[in-house]
Image (spheres, rainbow, N blue to C red):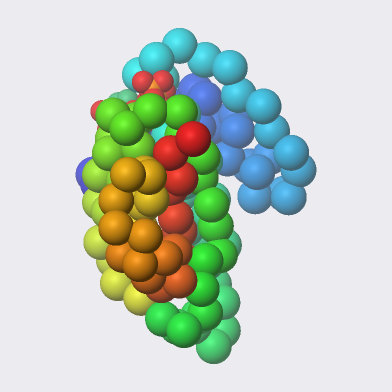
Length: 115
Ligand SMILES: Nc1ncnc2c1ncn2[C@@H]1O[C@H](COP(=O)(O)OP(=O)(O)OP(=O)(O)O)[C@@H](O)[C@H]1O
């Protein structure tokens, strides 16, 4: 995405997440929290050897409170996954065709769920 330097929140949170510890981040809007949790997830998933495939189901779940935030996170996720074409993102927001939602959950290795 062309970012060269992590934001403060990213620099503080990412190493702790990568170390496998639980993290609670509280920071102002626009400080880079989204990538602080998405980057470690992608880092972890892209290391699987052999690579996970489409039949593997969901590996990561992100819960978001609103439709808008869900779409915002999905957009960033798609950009971050640009180089990792085998990692499939998906989202489920409710109010949609159930079988389509199920299919997305089944093949989405990183799924966003709107609460
Ligand atoms: N390391 C970085 N360098 C430069 N820009 C960045 C970096 N990380 C994120 N950004 C940009 O900063 C903006 C805010 O990032 P992001 O949406 O992740 O913040 P946030 O804290 O999750 O915000 P919100 O609380 O509104 O969800 C976005 O435009 C994103 O592309």
